[in-house]
Length: 127
Image 1 (cartoon, one colour):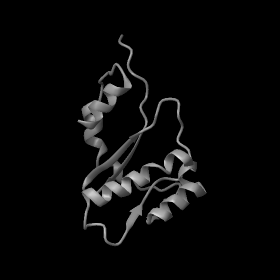
Image 2 (cartoon, one colour):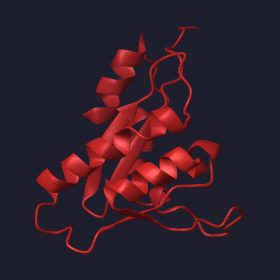
Image 3 (cartoon, helix red, strand yellow):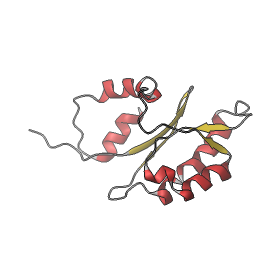
């Protein structure tokens, strides 16, 4: 039996046109409000470049109800960036849009593969 790399946690930001930003969490770090306030800043710059002229009425931002996302620091940062947060019901029976958009292809591609390191996992996920 071959030992595989550990878990790799990624925050993925996407829209109807595809994945915009993948931010990988450093090993031994947790997602908290301080960490989660940083990727939206990068996202705003990416939207200016990749979706130039298409973002005219603002950005609707949907995430779940994890404590780091609900923290005041996160909410203030998103408001400062001009992102409007959509309410996400805590026990919604609806399937997440991510079940149909970017992830099925990625899951199929990475299924039953073993990776020697986190770096190899990241390369495989992004190609």
